Length: 188
Image (cartoon, rainbow, N blue to C red; front, side, top):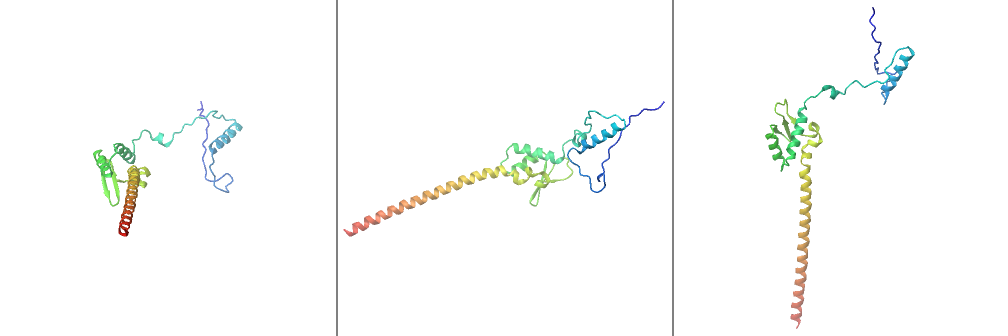
């Protein structure tokens, strides 16, 4: 009585090429090429091969399973929820975040945030939270509204300047007419 275990092999990737003169370069489809080479060797030696191989591995995220979001993702979700309420300014945004239980701590020029039960503070900047969650990005909507307001203000200011200039010109013309009338009366 012998135990008939299936014969199988492992493919081990080495960093050097087969002729040892340079490093092996992984190319698109190199896994398929090695699988075909392996299948050819197996058929030549009388071993069976897997006809339609199925991908059995999982990506790292799926392998981890239903892991809860990290502190940064929780902060991003909380900021999105606070921004959905359309705060009037950053002070109101900080207030909304505090109401959500997030600790907001200004430190120098930066703002630090910490979730309840979080281990450490996370800076609200591009490096820590991403470009969409930096303070300039959070103010972008307000800046866009300010730009429209500023343009309207500049247009109004220009209009008022033009109006004042027209009134001055009209006043100068009126003064010239009066001087001309006075001159004509003086000559008579």
